[in-house]
Image (cartoon, rainbow, N blue to C red; front, side):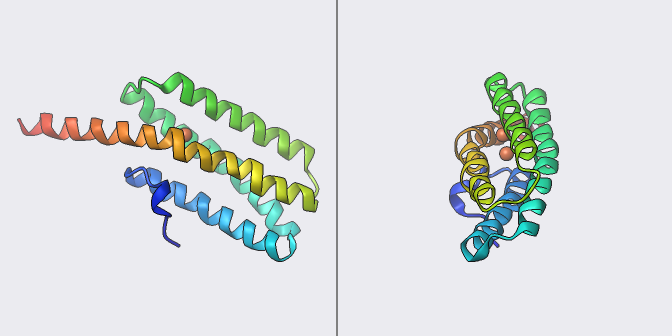
Length: 139
Ligand SMILES: [Fe+2]
Ligand SMILES: [Fe+2]
């Protein structure tokens, strides 16, 4: 499934990883629309916990290396989300229809909004920095 243009940051690794997440959101919402599936619920929460650890870490490394001016704020957002997912998993060790809907709307909704606001700003910055570096090499 292609990445909806509106989510693109233009940074390849970021777009590939975001697409994985968006595919998952679509799968979950299809399953919720049909008949919320306990297996899909468990898979999504486990995947999400693993994914954010890895994905946030990579974004944070780029912020550090490129000295991203907004990194404190962006980092705080990531930490806030990690805590939010942890709490959700603690409170929803068992499947429930309400839990599955909350996961789709609120938990996954949060990270989609994060892509649209903060990750796109970061993506613009990374692209500008990389361009500068390429130009510097040429001269
Ligand atoms: Fe981010
Ligand atoms: Fe991201």
